[in-house]
Image (cartoon, rainbow, N blue to C red):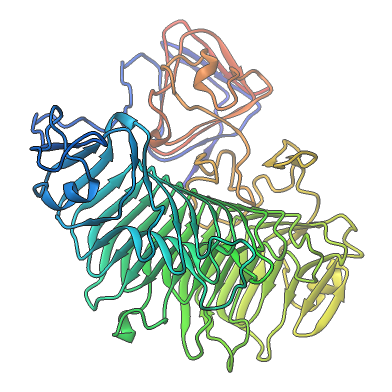
Amino acid sequence: MCKILFQVHVMQLKVSILFFFFVMWLSPNAQINGKQSGKVVSYNTPSNQNGNRSTEYFVSVSGDNSNPGTYQLPWKDINYACNNATAGSTVNVMQGTYFEQVSVGVDSITIQNYQNQNVIIDGTGVSTGAMVEISNKQGVTFDGFELQNNIHNDAQGILITGKSSNTTIKNCKIHDIHFSANPNDPINENTNSQPLIVFGDSTTPLSHLNIINNEIYNCRLGFSEALAVNGNVDTFNIIGNSVHDVTNIGIVMIGHEQTCSDPAKDQARNGVCKENITYKCSSPYAANGGIYIDGARDIVIERNSCYQNIWGIEVGCEHTGKTASGITVKNNAIYRNAKSGIALGGYDYPSGSGKIVNCIFYNNTLYDNDTLNDYEAEINITYAENCSVTNNIVYGTNIDNLLIIQYSSVAPVNVVLDSNLYYDLVGAVNVEFEWQNTSYTGFSSWQAAGHDSHTIFNNPDFADVSAFPPDLHLSATSPAIDAASDCGLIMDRDSVPRPLLNANDMGAYEYGIYWKGTLSNDWSNSGNWSNNTVPDSTDKVTIPSPGFYNHAPQISSNVQVSKIYIKDSSNLEVNSGAVLTVGE
């Protein structure tokens, strides 16, 4: 974002505005108006005004499938409704537990829990297949259900296949999907369960998929994954899900497994995986990740929290001769995982795995990973080409004092680590790095070998690491503030606007006080500010771009701040009789 730097000492207008001993940053389209214009910025989505209402059907445990499916005379089975409702309709399922399997047979249909009632689909007694299946259907939304107790080998919670498009799975709870009823049964590659699985197995892409605000937990997965998008899947969103307490990978996006018969299309691609939480995705038999890329391409992984998994976030490709490419990993908080916080590369290239190419990892915060003290380091790199690791905060605590490790039989090509912030409890002199089987003791030795020439070694001053979860936001004294190179970020892990001060901060979190305009346009209302406190003369404050607030700020009484940053297209109103003083 372009900024104009200028200094103003004293301005006397119809409204007094005093600026002295300060530098004020304005984006080219920002405004300070000396009179009240009455302009209020609002970005609320307008409601549908056409008054149209789709056909609605109802299902109740006390209903009957011979009924017409009305509220007064509902159907009994969800599966019956999903095959007898009309296209474009909504099926409302009323409270209760439904012991059945559901296969959706109608296009353009919404199946939802009625008025947020607790609706459970229970798989007790099911011996094969999925509890809910959507195959080759268009425009299906499945919203607000709890799925439980599908227990057999190859059990599935929700299965989406074929050339389905515009499918949405949201607000569901999926748990107790197990490959076996016995927790002590032996585990091998033939023991599997999949709580939510998407198979793009047609040569026509499975497209425009949305998996939003679901919770998956307490599942014994064997050699499978909790939430998987596999094969010919083009354009998808995995947003706001919580995946935890499962015995293998949390969220995975996959390619090159011959899920689709056309090798050129056999990759999950053009996706977003953001604002998810994965934790306790862990097992004694698999080095699984909270979020994993295996051979997929062109995916953004951002604003997730990954902790207490085996790996935090891993980008790799298991299949020889294949690649994962175009993966962006940014604004993630990754902490206290058993092995590395971030792993990238082909683990056994060229004979035992593929490789990753053209991937970037920036503005992530890594803290206290490698808790097993397995010599895995905070960042673990194997074979990769044309990848960069920048603007990250990497804080190590493992007993090996190891921050970065790179090992592969073939040296990586054009893998750049630079402009990061590193810290380890043992200090800059004793911290360890390893690259191609060469160990470097001390940060200066690491830099002398040609790595991280612009990287800082310093304590990032996190807000609080004494409790769990640790608070990895920056304190006011953090050297990460304003220290990042410009990667085009517009928000941080918490959806806070970037930058808030002069430049972006390193790591996943941006530091600063900013206008939220949540309640009104009143500057003096504490609820309109990010820290719930009205700024005073010692504060540096930011008025972000209008997309980050509901009401534009107005000043009606005398105000003094240390500095003010007004971003692109923002509008600050100073009413008649009020004085805004900027500077100490």
